[in-house]
Amino acid sequence: MAEEILERRACVSGIGQSQIGRRLEQSPLELTLDACLAAVDDAGLRLEDIDGLSTYPGAQNFQRGFSGAGAYEVLDALRLKVGWYDSGLETSGQLGSVVKAVMAVATGLANHVLCFRSVWEGSAQGKGGRAGIGAGMARVGGEMQWRIPYGAASAAVWIALFAQKHFGRYGTTREQMAWIALNARRNAGRNPLAIYRTPMTLDDYFAARMISTPFCLFDCDVPCDGGTAMIVSRLERARDLRKPPLRFEAVGTALRGRPSWDQFDDLTTMPSRDAGAQLWSRTDLKPSDVQFAELYDGFSFLSMSWLESLRLCPVGESGPFIEGGKRIALEGELPLNTHGGQLSAGRLHGYGFLHEACVQLWGEGGERQIASRPEVGIVAAGGGHTCGCMLLTRQ
Amino acid sequence: MAEASVPFRVLPDLSESTREFWTAGARGELRFLHCLDCGVILHPPTPICFQCRSKRLAWKPVSGRAAVASYTINHQPWMPGPPLPWIIAIVEIEEDPKVRLTTNLVGIAPAEVSIGLPVRVCFEHHASPEGDVWLPLFEPDPSRRRPGAR
Image 1: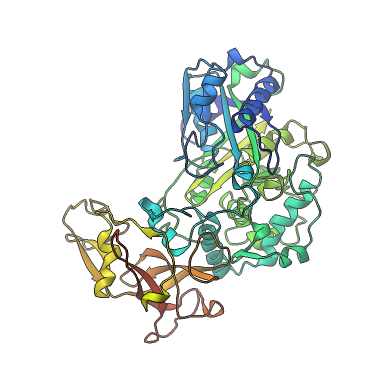
Image 2: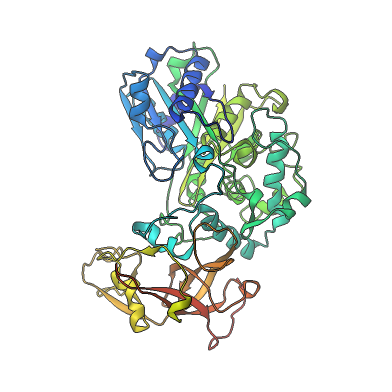
């Protein structure tokens, strides 16, 4: 291993969430601030202690509901004085913003960084269906021009093309992939804040309408409204806070192929492959040390892709690994997406997975708490060419 | 393709760097930006060759032959378009399989599509006051035998 692994200077000291719902019709900034203030309280900090801010994706008009608040809005609303702040979409997944906070803490630019991600996609879509990216535009430019004219107007389509390639090369099946959705729903049943909690069977899964093969409706996450926040603190400043610090053992942010939905070198995998390899190069822990996994499921296949990229199962074998759902159950050898994932708990867009990992490591899971009180958890977010991951430990 | 049957599409901008790609279909050609020094195809087009850093670049036609790298049968009406379902595919072009296009397959039933299927380019002409566009689509290539799915 190289020099000092600097992410170990940082930890999560507190987490918070706003109300979460399918369509709350509530101010997105209010949801964002609710989550931020909850995280500050959870850490046992005062607002004056916050000296850094990081968010994904920041203020922008990419798609209605996609961003609940920008960095400047929150800085101003809370009258924060910071030594460092950042936002942006072009980073290693939604949790790339948390990795940037870790780096800010490690370099000493800040001691306690408020990180947040909020969405209001449920309300934005109203009662209509999920609109395509580019719908209503007269013409499309930039990198979108290579896909939108062909009706490839959603990440559902772009990721379906990766999934089909995986199915073709490795013999992966929908019967196997279904277990990502079924497992998520099973866990959501024990999470009072999850959006969809009624039990789902394999028959229900196969009865759902197709979106873009091999994905049916239940392979796609559920748009919602809500905010999630966490405080990334300098380890030595967190030792005396309310909760035991959750350390960043290692992170992965690498991108070693073309940053493109269709030009990446291997269509059976994604740059999650690179981020995963990098993560394991920065720690003496092994995949077998991981006690639970919170892996992005914007589309069910992405969790499978992350299982392989993080070497939690051999490449190409995520299908057999999850089949039947026993191994990834709350009582199984590798509990997965213990809150219900974005598929059933709601599309909080990456941050929900890190939030849940902290819940489990602090033993706050209630009915869904992993009984063994785990000390090592892995978190990953993103898909396509925007992928990041982190290994968390409780000391 | 008869003009009357051309479906609605959100068309690409005809910018300086991509106009050639979207209009070469007027001559029945699929064109890519090539490096004149090392010969590599630059797609999407960039002003400098990624391989040899040359700026001597030119648009040249390729054969139009390709193979299906992956596909999806899309049932969701994301926007107005051709009748559903849409066969959306990524194809690898014959001259350099690392160069891929996201496209639609036409002239084939969804159930007949498979990875590795040999296809050839065809064009869908969109007349427009903002500039005509010829979208490259792909159809089965009867002149080539199917090499078998990968």
